[in-house]
Length: 393
Image 1 (cartoon, one colour):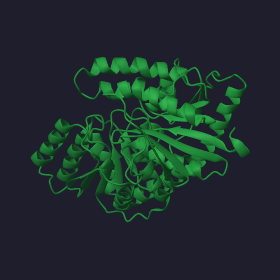
Image 2 (image 1 turned 180 degrees about the vertical axis):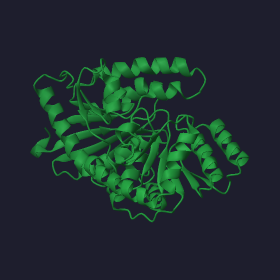
Image 3 (image 1 turned 45 degrees about the horizontal axis):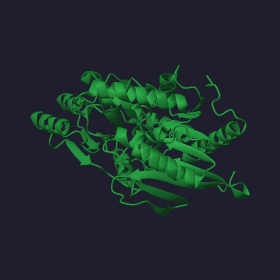
C-alpha cells in the first residue's frame, strides 16, 4: 500500500475533456465512479486515459483526482488497444506505481499481464456490437474481436460484472474472480422532480442500427394512428450516417416532422432536463450490457420500455418498473408505450418503484463502497500469490 495507508488507484478508462458531456456509457460510468471513489479519505485516484486530440502527455486536476491524458497511438481502436497504445499506457502505469489498477472497456487489453493487482470492468462486448453493425466485413472483424476479447477476459484476475448477462457470457472463459456490481448513476438524477410532459417519450442512445431508434419512430406512428398524442425526443450522436439518413427519411415519410426531435449529443444536465419532462423512457436496442440511460431514467422515477433481451431484463422488472418488449415488434412497442402514456396512475406507480430500485442498486456511494472492497480483495490476493482465484459462482 502507498504511504499512510492511502491506496493509490490507477483508474484506466475513456474519460472526456469535458466531464459534463460524456460520450457514451463508459465515460458516464467512469465519471460517476471516479467522483464517488475520490470522496474516500483512504484512496488516491489517478485517471489514466488516451485522447485523439492530445499531442503530448498532460496531467490536470479534476475534483479530487488527477487526470493523466496520453496521446492516442494507432490507426484503429484495435491497433491502439493491442499495439502502441497498449505499450504507452502500460509503461506509464508502471512508472506511476499504483497499488491497484482498475481498467474499463478496451483499456483492459492495455493492462493485460501487468504484475500489479488488477480489476477489470466489462461494459459490453465489442465483438457482438461489431457483428450486428452492418459495416463492411462485420463478421470477420467480429471474429477477430471475439478472439482478442475472450483472451483478455481469461487474463483478468478480478472482473466486475455490471449485469448477470455479462456474467453469463463469461462462463467457461474467465479464470479470475467475478464480482457483481451495478453501474453508478450521478447523484443529481436521484433528486429530480418529474413534471410528466404527458406524452413525451425520451430516448438517449447513439443513432445506429444496434440501438434501433427506427422502431421507436414506427411505434410513434402507430400511436398517432390510434389517437394517442405523443412526442419522441431522441438524444444521441448519429454514429452511422447512412442509418441517420434512413431515419430522417422515414420520419418525413410518416409525416412526423413535428413529433420527432433529434437532439444530437447533449450534456448530462440536458439529459436530466429531458427526464424531468418525460412520461416514459424508451430503449429498444438489439445488444446492451447494462445501459446507463435506463438506470438514469429509473433514478429519476421515469418508467421504462425496453428490449426483452441481453442485459435489459436484469434492469427492468416487467410490469413493475416498466415493460419489456420485442425490439422487432413495432406493435408490441407501441402497445406498451400507449399503456404508459394513457395511464397517469400506472406511470406514477412504476416511476416510484423505479426510483426505489435505483437507490438500492445504482447510487454512486453504494457502488463505490463495493468497488473499494474489490480493490482490497485484489491487493490481498496478489500479496498472497493468489492473483487468479477461481471464479466464484
